[in-house]
Length: 142
Image 1 (cartoon, helix red, strand yellow):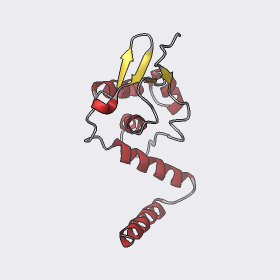
Image 2: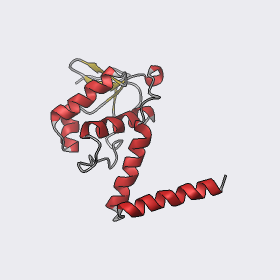
Image 3: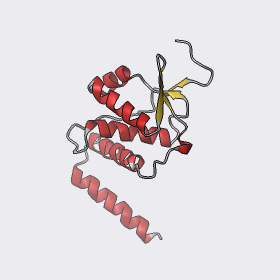
């Protein structure tokens, strides 16, 4: 495939250790959407960056092709990405997108934190206590 000069592929490690949490109360498609919104709005996926294909992402995350397709359609509808027929999906210029109502960034960060803590052997109550301790420290330092 020939790329235009301004098209670049998404960094392969930008998704990091992100994994879908099937035990979460958050639907799988929403977890993925929130993670991609975070990557786009934080600049980890820059404008005009080509996203992994629907098939590539479905294999990487171990989810159904239709789930990723739904995520991409939803992101395109909301102005985060655009599709070029035969070329793929690309990050849109989000400077014009109103994502103030989208809480994906904080939820994606929290999800990453919790997944990392669980993978290191922490129990849910320990994670909650750790966060509470940090909040108390921050409030005391003000």
